[in-house]
Length: 189
Image (cartoon, rainbow, N blue to C red):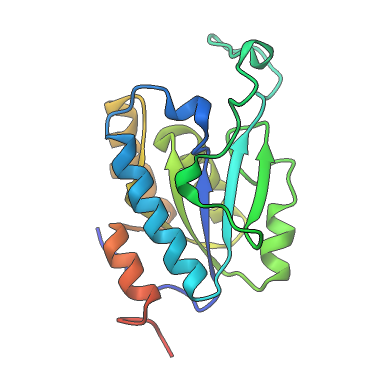
């Protein structure tokens, strides 16, 4: 898996790196994921590219076999991780579904900025990250997935997304490779 290029107008979308979800057990150390995401966010900001920080504060309606009661969650559950170093110019999106585009103004905001590609990172790989990647792909954005900047609570679910789903939605690669492209090593002129 390798990232060939990034469009000149690319945005970073960080999914659900918030206090309540960071407390869950994950298949990869969350500290390493946060370090990778922080590096990506710094590179995007350094080059004046948008950083989108997404949190989730609810759940979609409808019956499921597992439910999450948001009214029983701690008050700071949806607060973004401090490691993200949120800046005033960052785009903040609050969602109530798995994907960051459903019932939010994210698509409109990105298209107003001329964004044609998104790099996606965060948690959980098989839920918020995959859903957002599917939606971005369906909306016509080029999609890149930062594999070491994401994790899941289930190894099989993570592996399924990475090996079976992501190759059909875009390109995948490590944070270091994506940052090198952003910094100009392989960026188209």
